[in-house]
Length: 131
Image (cartoon, rainbow, N blue to C red; front, side, top):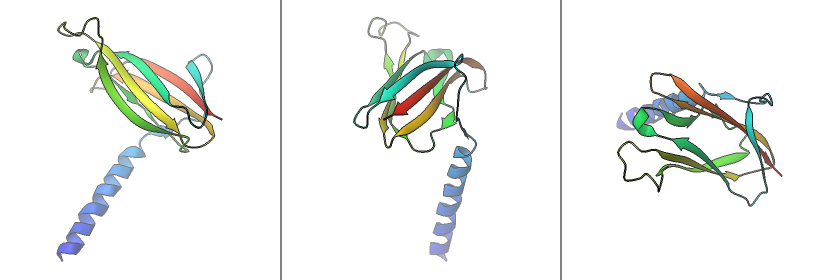
């Protein structure tokens, strides 16, 4: 009985996790007027994307799309304070994302700078080409 309950809890948790992820869409193309930059990577390169940020305003950067097919993998995401203003209350900094290529192809990244209530301040679109 206990093993069945544990299985059901794990299965239900995986279902919830997958259903949350499926809410995001795969972006296959972005019009050139919306595209902020294109990055060309080799298979041994690492991509770093740096976005100006200030979490004290209530706005946070997030990736708004699924990265499929798995062309690149997110290695890390961190907020880094600005060295020039790090001692100031409410000072901003930068969100850093690091990605590593898994196979050749193209993928689009859609970043949104938004508050929890859904109000969007800014959007960034990037195309990543892995050769």
